[in-house]
Image (cartoon, rainbow, N blue to C red; front, side, top):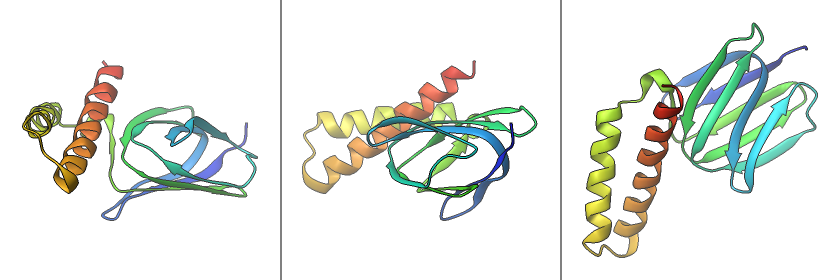
Length: 135
């Protein structure tokens, strides 16, 4: 199977730039997978796992925050607020983040503080889930 160009970008780095056979991710509507020859496509992304199979068959697993994907011809670009490959996830930090955000939510935060705490909680929870998937 021929590969396609895949780039995963955040505001601070290019997390991945290479050829892939497939990439799957979570959109706001559910799970999606792109293979070579996929029709042009743009979708908003939700917090979730990202699975990549490179052209040479290597499988990579990561955790994404919110963003969007753009599929145009044989180029797939994924733009995210944050992205970490499983080996980059700091489990202790994610666990601490879950505890802190749970406390903020339980204490009755409202408005922007509540929204921020819920979003951080969701990202920490997904980091721990992805870290567990690789064990």
